[in-house]
Image (cartoon, rainbow, N blue to C red; front, side, top):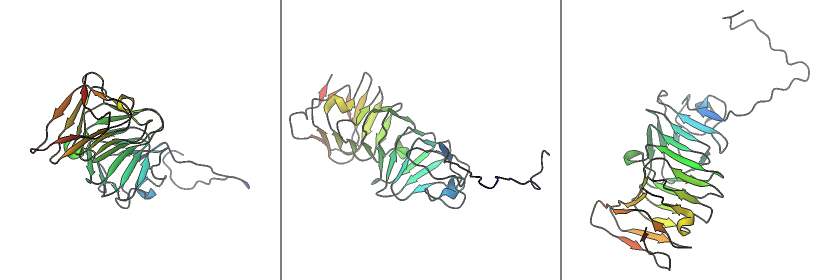
Length: 239
């Protein structure tokens, strides 16, 4: 009878087996604490993995804190939601990143994109919600900016299959820029801009082949410098 919550029996028979798997997406509930891997903080259905996405909304009093290296598929921070990443911690993302809330990333933390296909960066990734270190470490596909991105420390494309596409947006780097192989791993189509906005000396390092950039802006907050690295391909070419 509709509305009753007691007086029922489930009979699985003598050999009944109940099979279940983690859902493709989990919403943060903060049921017991702010600890990211605690399954009770995700409704008891597991915790995020490279195959499981995470949604963080504003409702729970306990907002998630990542205190050790973790993996996740998509990350979606909803309006009013907050994700905190503690010192020295790396969050590996296998899918897309979208922030409509708040990211509190310690200056020594790292966001690492490791997925096999195309991945996107969306929403607010500037000022207080900027990435600290951004590492592109992919076996295939590209990381595509769908918004302006600020990196508070270092930007790195790790190898020849780690492709980053500015997609007409502005990438701001406050420390060092490290690109593995010219335009093969760093793509700067029309309208794209690379901005150096640090408050201490910065370096530009590019190896493998020539890198042609669309626009470059020097917008450092104090009198400082950007030093071109050694080697044949470290000229900063605009075109």
